[in-house]
Image (cartoon, rainbow, N blue to C red; front, side, top):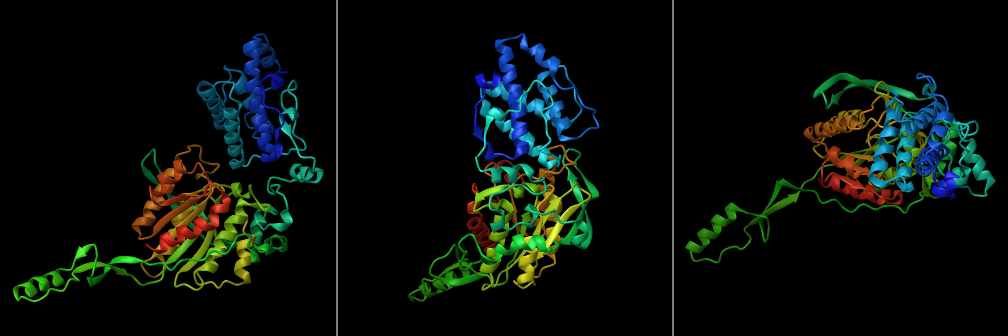
Length: 485
């Protein structure tokens, strides 16, 4: 009855993953119960009496999180020690104060944030066996409208977390979205300890993060979905000739420029004293500086990039790979050089750093297979990855070196609960790279990225692709900007 009175019904079900649908439904249950209790006050005690029992605090299953969140949103006297449950209550109350209980869309945004946090925490969810914790609540099927395509529905419900559902999977390429690569199958190159900045304490945590350099496994299952990398979904990009100007290289005796050539100006005065016609070319301007630019493209390979992009059945990871490889192909005939690396993290003890294509590597089948088979999983500890990329760039010759980060979300990891901690650490890591003579730029495929990329990379050193289809062109523009210095 509460849903019929207050909820938007038959919302498109394919827009959300099954776990996100469950979290949205649970938040919607709490919202409509408060509205119903406002109209019929006697129902409040009945709801509280029939809520599911609070599970053991050591139980970190998805069902336990839902039961604890239900209790937290319904019972103002309930106290919980879990950060996620407390965040759910805080966001719910803030939304009620700001928008009112009648704004279902605002509460759906809260639920999306909470579902994303559960994904970052890698809480496992089995849609086939999940049951709503409180027995008086229904299955919320009235809230969702599902397509009649039974095959697609079966794929969505039966796919495990490590294999996100997507349409036309046989036509896309992403090893991470179809099969989890075992650590034994990957080739480990090295382990490096990096510090991490604690912004609240104002001190370095020495040897805090372990960065594991790897080469991805190229198993037959991975390569079978990676073959379409040989055929681009997007139109090829062409790079304009980069004209790199430098104040170190000055062109003298120019018709126009930004400064006066003092030697030419003195000669003008001498010619006037002698009654001669002076030479009008007395300006200086920056000249073109020669030298190869070495750019490292650092791809975000976290679990969130397995989300469908809405293009040709591709995921965000698929588009990242194609855009990066198209950029490499576009630079073959130029003097510039591009390397492609990627990263994800599973707490500070395992920051995986993948060497997909180095500057000296040839663009052959092996390079394509490495890029096609690299998995996307876990979280995004950006600061440690930037420090490892800086080490590689510092080892490259020449002055023109740049780091181009491609990401789809703010830095996060399951062992960090302060949302500003990893953002501030990444900001310090970028400053360290800049002091080492490395230009940095971030391309974020996230309409809401402005709140964190500006803090990390600075006012002019980032771009935002509001739609994933813009990624290849935006990546080209970012490369030209870095190469031009």
